[in-house]
Length: 606
Image (cartoon, rainbow, N blue to C red; front, side, top):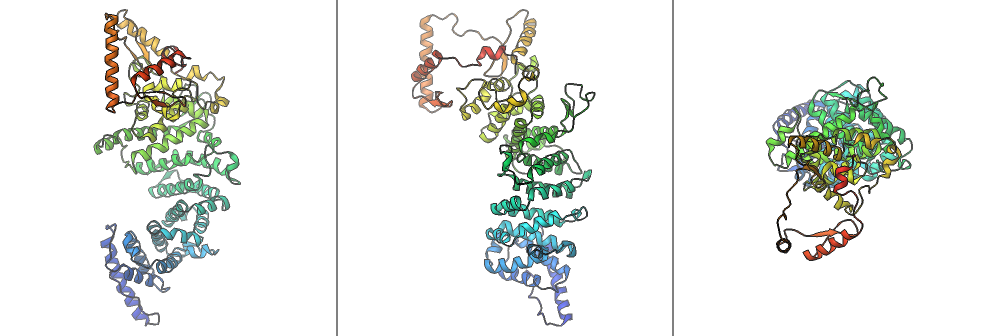
């Protein structure tokens, strides 16, 4: 690092000015060269960083040189070995003192009223960026900042932001540092939320920051950081499954207000499609923290009857505005397409499904699961949201569509069904949970929409293989769905499509037998010829023995593992195919499971 020791405090002012000017020129050249080097290494990191801190400790340091020293320190803090070579105790004490003072947090942490506007904006911004880098690289720094009451100081400063100060650079780094401290320290997270009304104060800031009709890139980044802080405070202590008494005092109103603000953000206009996509993803993650009675705030007020006379429009459904839900569903469509494309390991396939101007941040899985989870909770919490999501995700199928497998095609239903059988059980289980919620926890309805083969994995993981078609947590839907004619009006009906499609196919085939609905594949199929037609009893017995020997060989080589449904509703392996036949005979001799193939083809509820 081309930096010499600072001049003595009692040196001649001209000498001090000349030394500072020379240092400023050298550091400017160094920072320009190293700016693109993400991890600049030093030959003597402890001495070089020590000289930077010695300069920063000088109260007479010119602003330009202070900014350059902070910028160089920020660049060097990217490389962990540079920090590990320093004495931890000395660095934490001397370094934190300088950075907290330059960022304006020292006085706030002590209860003062120092405002960052009284300090150079670049100096405050660079100091906060240094603290963020150090918090990521040094394990002990976060706890030290918490001990110095920095989270409370950051929250206090965030609550005092104005519309003018939001246009500056440092508020975004205030929020990033607050997110880092809250995410890494549970004690700080609890203190901010339970004792300092963090959710309520940051919700007010969110309202102020989301007021512009067109959000710039800088404002989108700030809103994204703010939403992440709110998620960190709310996650794990309140959510859709929690009771109202788990909320801190005054938080119920704050969460209701937050739901309305999230609707505003989901519908906001942004100058950049990429920022729009990231902000929507952050908002969807925060939806998971809302109490159940807040999800209806995502819907607009009642739409006049004349505007919602049609069954469904682009923005109205059953007299409610569902524009925000449309945004989430469109995001789900994109994430499902990305998830399917990522399985091919072809970058070109991933780029082809990305919207114009959007770059994917993070993996396809971590972008998909929060969207599925948010829609799952919203569907369990709001009748209107659930009915509209089912209208979009599981629409009524025509007779031609009933002849296709549910996973075939490029629709959201098809992509959702393909996700059900994905090797990643996290995505598969969440997709199946969403389908389960859309069908009001009815196994028979979910199987009709997806096919038993696609949905069997979810049933096995949940121990529902031996359950009836109506088993599940259906009581959560009884209070808002019973007696409203939903089953008749909403579901598409495999049986109805089967009858219509069968008649049409019969006409095309000049009186041929109609196709029948196969609940395993989830589609209508032509009648198959009887493979045993024309066989004698001896020939049939020979084929049975041949099949049993083939199953035995497959089991012995580990290709398959025959199983029956155990008492817990999960697959129970059997040791020999003969045991499989005996267990199946016992089960078929008892009460037959409801929702068989005949019911699948005759029930009018899909």
